[in-house]
Length: 89
Image 1 (cartoon, rainbow, N blue to C red):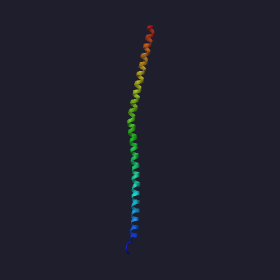
Image 2 (image 1 turned 45 degrees about the vertical axis):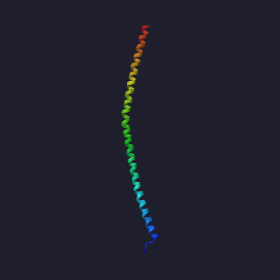
Image 3 (image 1 turned 135 degrees about the horizontal axis):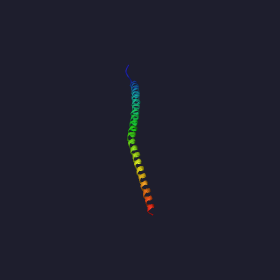
Image 4 (image 1 turned 90 degrees about the vertical axis):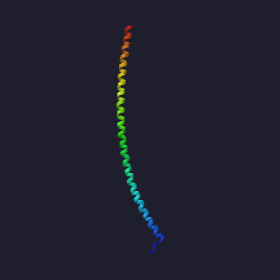
């Protein structure tokens, strides 16, 4: 029983269908792995962002505290000069 062109074509189409199923199966695993990697990368960037923002926030609070302290000293100095000027008059 010789193989006809139709038989070869049907066998080839079956082989191509099986190969496409295998490729789609692998693509599915690749996509799932990529999602896991991206989720980990997102977690890592959040942790790095926290590490960077924490010292910046602390420095901001320290700077604000120093500025408030200087403002209070300036107000005391200004009020002291104002009282001194008032006594001279």
